[in-house]
Image (cartoon, rainbow, N blue to C red):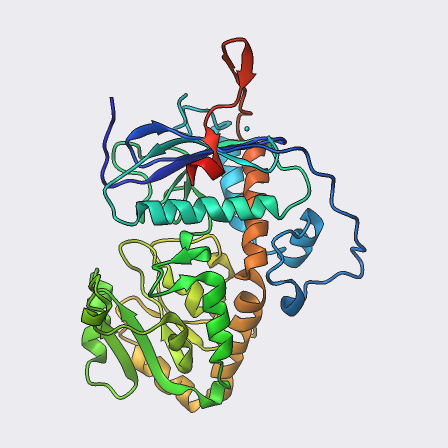
Length: 401
């Protein structure tokens, strides 16, 4: 019998040194799975002493080998280390603890999809699956055999399953059992508004201005979902330093109001981040601008790269303000009077995020590191008996798609 939970979206998957199996779950039960392939040869060796990550050459290389990933993105793994250490204390992941109650190299199988009523369920889940698939097919070396679930809802885990071990887009500090993954936007998001991540990067590059030539106002667009956003709208109303508007959404593009393409945010010297229903997917885009990113703190919801945000010192790469924005105008006035400091912060942001840790290459490396660390703390999937033969559960990724 189908079980509906309209407010949660989860996806379940499996890998093997020979396969990957994936579930998409948002709570109506229907079995799926992905296909397998022949084992690939290991990637050729490279000179670890001479190779360095070059963002111009390497930022879209999805198949960097493990040593290259570690060399290029050495600071990308703390969230995975944290999840692994938490699992060491609580015990090995089992099918029950990971909400997988019921796998060959480099190919995905979908085991199960549990759906919800949200209109973008298919879009989000497919984007995650496609990102995983891309990270696999670009990689010539073996991947571990794992089975997992992932949740594509803004708020992971509901009150009925508060401790299920799953991959999630975001988590609160107290949700130590969740393993964070890159969100769907690194593939594509809201086609006619944002589009593919790589295309956003291209458009940002095409419209890039020198920092000192940027519009010296602070920009923000968004829906009025929470008190923080409402406060931002109130304090900025009529202020000369603000280009801040509420988006009025409509399926008909001609009826939308306040829309500003994400790449056009980068024309401004200051770009403001706010959280949404939980986290907000805007931050990764803003950090690709050569602008000063303003973040109200403390943040309630974490993403896998938040540890790379540096609020002060010579490597400062964003400006933090109070959660109620009460010091926003003061901070803006300071940096408008100290443009050299503002540019240093923007340059640090570019070096940390746009040119390294938020590159497409970094996303693929993170996915494979997630597979590796998860495998070290989880059970190994097994084939099951079907008649006279043993087979993997699920359907091939290509068939599912």
